[in-house]
Image 1 (cartoon, one colour):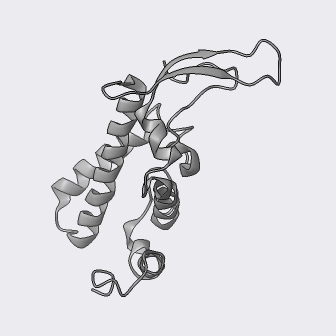
Image 2 (tube, rainbow, N blue to C red):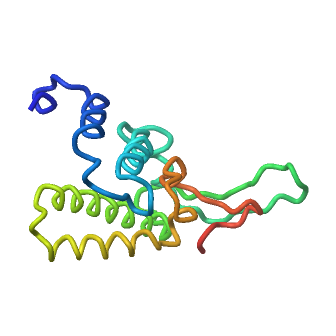
Length: 161
């Protein structure tokens, strides 16, 4: 109620949830605690709370990446940036992130309604499927990288063509 009345800052709410609620949630998407999962997940989402360069990158289409000729040279990329441009890789990852939000909300429902066994089973199955996505980096909670708009391999190639 204090949060809804703007009497509690989001960081303090997260600390309260960590101390009093999240211990009962079990594991996150992989084997980390729910507290670790939510802490890193929300920190990775924070740069997108306001429109800035991080969010703007999601509106670009990566057309081509040129591999550097010599080691140490910068990677050069051609981007399309206009209304109506669609990058299929970005669109797929945005859908994945919507799925992650659905998973988080489902886990919150399960914690509040432990008798809903059928839904709990479906959400846990859904979480296992999300956790196996090739679009998540190495299937670990390195959420600082999960929401990067552009992803390249170290050789300059586009990841997951």
